[in-house]
Length: 282
Image (cartoon, rainbow, N blue to C red; front, side, top):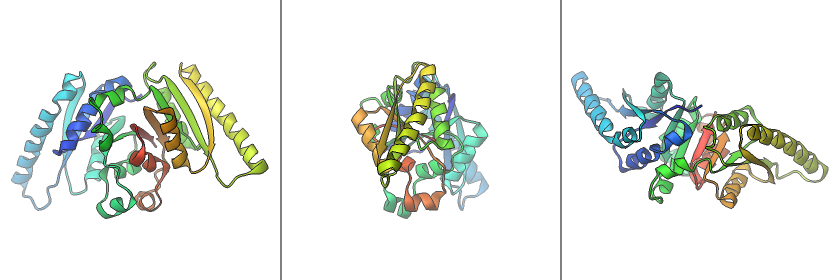
């Protein structure tokens, strides 16, 4: 069960959105929040570093007020280093959190190759689930916390029947009882299949999806198997739009930053384009 989460904190206007989003996390069972900030200490002397760390800690603590007011146990941790994603992942390990929650600018492939993306590096390398939400989506709602509170109302799980997909399903089943109202379990068949091969693949997929739906039913979750044919990322996005999904969950095998940047993946496609928050499970 996800009871604790790390939220990367910076001093940009975007952090206010993600902090307000985090106010809704108790609906998913979260009770403890670790706010992590990285100070780039390159070229600084020891006393200057210490002063900058103290300044950052105080600023993050002030920004944490909405989370504390929501009844969350808030802890502030400051790291120093020149690689934000590595330092944040280190904080997540040291703080022993169950998940990482952060925003994404939804950068495309070329933008990521040129400027990089801390949030996407976190997705690829994190050892715990990552709940991601596009800042563009946060900016369109009156109360960002409502996006978390409604996360499980209509949930889509995309699965390729891998071990990561199984862990994604188990993460859903471990959410607080009653937090998931409807679950669509979606599998995309190879678009090149036809004839007997297609029918055989459909039968096999439907059998596995029914088993997964039965597991969900045992947890009191209404679940519907969905088999489509086509590119997995496009199939997932189409299902999200058609179902008006409030959340999506996907497993990722973490193929490494360079491969992800060049080829993309279902999980990164969802983070960049989904019209709802995305929970990525390794």
